[in-house]
Amino acid sequence: KIYGGRLHPLTQALNYIKKIWIEMGFKEMSGNFVETSFWNFDALFTPQDHPAREMQDTLFIKNPKEGKLPNQKIVNQIKLEHEKNWKYKWNPEIAKKLLLRTHTTCLSVRELARLKKFPAKFFSVGRVFRNETLDWSHLAEFTQTEGIVVGVLIFKEFLVYFKEFFSKMGYEKVRFSPVYF
View (tube, rainbow, N blue to C red):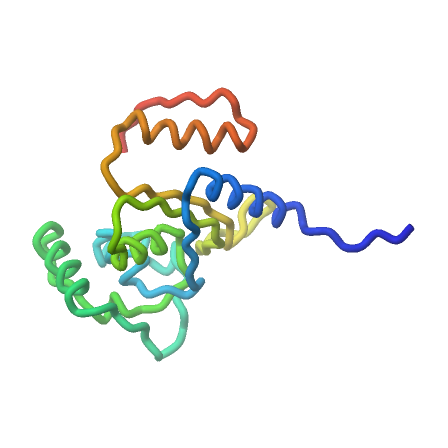
């Protein structure tokens, strides 16, 4: 017998994770690998002088062409929050720099910026990139998944989402421990 090709085990796992999110009523978010510093950092309230923005952690695109900022209302809101809370002059040129996204949370913040209807539930499963020292256990890219719930939610409901997700992944015993970050 001749057996045809099969999906790679990682692709199968990612498809299964997507299926779980969809079964839980979440809608998928997707986006480009190349992102602006605005969406990857600024909109997530990361100061423009934060070490995570250094070339040692982030893979910036060497290209004189810069990214575009969103509408001026959003830019002004982000600028105001940075200048008011971080106490520095926010620079739009830094926000326009292009990079390979370092997390999928930039997809969540973009979705929140265009969201018109509440409540809502979204998820993403996507490749992200970090400037890592390569070895047998580290690559410059990995896959991240995240979910976001927009609306009124009590903490117990939040934990139910985690338990359900991990239960469907095959982890029946899930424990939550409070920690400080």
